[in-house]
Image 1 (cartoon, rainbow, N blue to C red):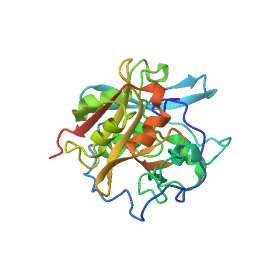
Image 2 (image 1 turned 90 degrees about the horizontal axis):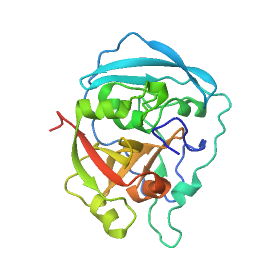
Image 3 (image 1 turned 120 degrees about the vertical axis):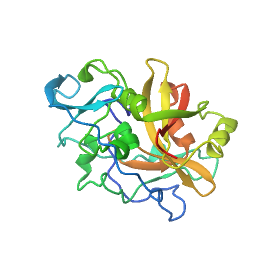
Image 4 (image 1 turned 45 degrees about the vertical axis):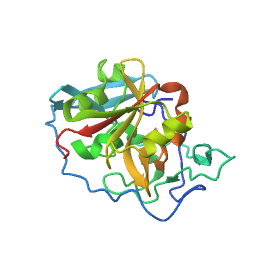
Length: 253
């Protein structure tokens, strides 16, 4: 299950807060800088996706590190929403706040109907506002045949970001605490779960504070946007990554 890839988690219909949500504060306090808008080439030929059984339109952004190939999936009428209670349930032996669905996403992430969630993924959400992407863009986080054997997320990171921190997977209390209280992190830093091949990014998100702790806000595959502790995310992708890297826009002061 790679949220940066082409198969996401099951759909999610509810856009209201779920059990485990905390106070009424929202995840959108940090101001975004104007997007960079890399130049766009003429569209590539569509490519057939065996997973979806359709031809997928593609466009290319000219980034400093190379061509970034975006996929453009149509709204899928067979989308079956379900409530992601297993993600937000957390550890039943504690009363910890395990996160919530973002009830009111800001532009460009607002959708008019649930089926539109299938059109963009976690990598698009994590870096999209920095480079002018929107909800009709799918940014693969791994080398993929549909992107001509390239890793588009890697191209974006190499072009516009620098790595500023690395953490162990959030599978121990110490690792969780180090991330949540780190002085190295800033609002809107991009947090990537990193697999050992390529590298590949099964999930990407952004830092967003919750009180005095660092949380993350990110989109889960084809599902809506969640605001959660890193521990919640790590539990979902436990077998898919072995490092946590944090990136920051190069021109971000």
